[in-house]
Image (cartoon, rainbow, N blue to C red; front, side, top):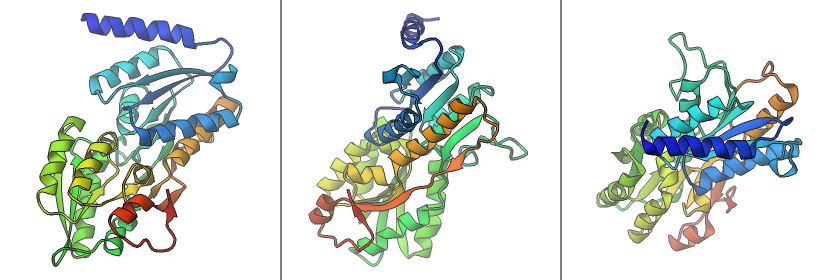
Length: 319
């Protein structure tokens, strides 16, 4: 064991001892990275718990919290450490913590949020059976056609076709699946899709600049954790080239995208938190199962609409 790993283990142990209080439930919460969008889900999750009597500030809940800062080896260490602490449940915010938690425990309930369905995450077994300890709230990409359909409604092409640019993380199963589906949608809608892969957040800025050099009319920000964590650099590059951003994620509109049809990230976390609260109250997962996202919205950013001189149709909520 190297020195850094030893220091991490000692730090985790000492901070957990400080966090735990006897006689109240303990949850472990794992963030994939620092990000304003997925932070909304975390807030929603804890708000739902507090509304049901589980509040760390009031001493009715123990919380062990860690953020992997986008580093997969660190994420694996965090998940394995949290399992040793035997929490009542593990809450996973975004795709990779959900996958990692399920890969490492079959006994502790895992409540996911900002994550794909078990099928998209390839967490089902050979018979198609889902993990027995997976709960919380997931999302498929069935709504993507509506999100992508906003493009011809709002964007005028410079040429004969609307040229749509996308960046996707090829290591995220739901991101790869999204690209495959959007390729079909683009072809059916007489749009040209130009997509480039990335392997990590550090690659996003360079890849986005390369994409923008291909004279795209609009950037489509798909539900990809790498997009979430690198959105400000994408936004800066697109604004400099006068390319608006459309997305399937409402949280990105508040951060500078033009418009979206997609999940309310705060409500996504809140929905998962209600499930977690129900489990803590009952002490059993007997009547629980993972759920699909319930709340999606059409939203737009007034500042971006003004910047790009785009008229927003009725039915969109300003953020």
